[in-house]
Amino acid sequence: MRPTANGIVDTHLHYWQWPRDAQSRAAAEAEARRSSAPIEEELPYEEVAATIRHAGVEHALQVTRTLSGYDNTYSVEGARRLPDTFRVCGRLDPAGADLPGRLRAFTSDPTMVAVRLFWYSADDRWLSDGSMDAFWPEAEALGLPVCVYAPRNVGALDGVAARYPGLRLIVDHLGADLFSPLGHRFDHWPEVCRLSRFEHVYMKVSALPEATGERFPFPAAQERIKEVYDRFGPDRLLWGSNYPLTTRVCTYPEAIDLIRVGCDFLTAGDRAKVLGATATSVFGLPW
Image (cartoon, rainbow, N blue to C red; front, side, top):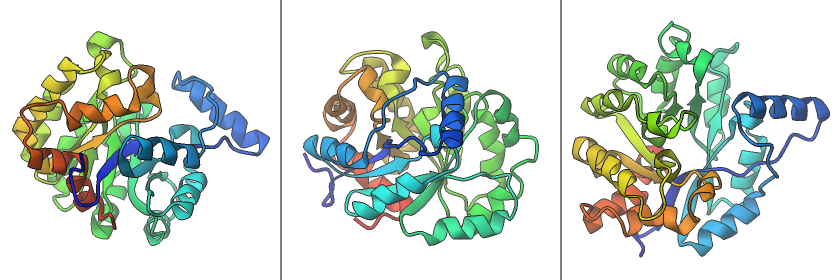
């Protein structure tokens, strides 16, 4: 199935390379331990490209992993080497010096189409304590889409969306807390759903097999998608796999089939939007 003329867009996957110098490698491993992530083998972009193409996915957004800190070098390398396949949702320190200059440099690279903010535990307070007051208006003025993963403070995005109506906000993984026990991953679901009142807030339908802890055809995940579909509509939903982490619970084709063949409430037109057309519009993709 080809849901759009230009095919499926996976809005959330990862390829990575461990830092080559010892100090940066040690810092990356420390970050992995802090977030309870495994110390994994490298995953080259060539291998990821071959995997997704074999499954019928033409294009993808590489999301720079937190293990890489704010270093998007390898993400950009993959997008430059394989420009018909990848664009980058990169990471940037929103509290560092010369924010306007760094954001301009960030957006001047044509491979960069969005920035990802990741908060967990102690860092969550940044969303509501004023630390981000300089970042939001700059991103809004630049037209830079902002993907946010802050599952334990997703309600704070309500205030951000209200203050910056021109800011494209994308909530990763439907706001599910992938670091919590299985029965508590959607504890903040009411706050997620309340964001539907803002037309410039989008939901990334990603990592749901992991979030629900179930096997294909993921009935609980389909129920969550139906709820956001009813509130946000297909023009504000974007599918993503969270590859390769999603393969802990399902195959990559099964992650696609959650939308491609599941969710029988979706029309053919809806599937085309969720699987590609909405992402193309939101991120200004060239394909």
